[in-house]
Length: 130
Image (cartoon, rainbow, N blue to C red; front, side):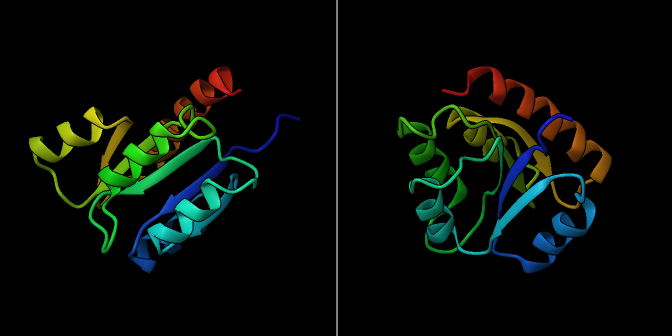
């Protein structure tokens, strides 16, 4: 049996984290409502996720800045990020993709669509994994 896909989700909205937890039972999931804690986890020696779901608009550290840090770090730069945002404007989408998001999802999102994006990202991740 193939290893479960390990997804790390960062969102300051607990409702969204609950949706991930209830809607993605087939995945190994670690959620953070605090981007700093997510960053600490990612840059520690903990197991690295296959895919990151990253909210764009968060207090203290925004998702774009955090993506940039993740992709600037040798141990995490291979991890694909799916940007998730309540904003559906071209500038936000462009920034997310420019700073390393593999894909983009607008809230409210469809769980089936999210799963397709996660599977695609995990496939890429596992090919690039160090």
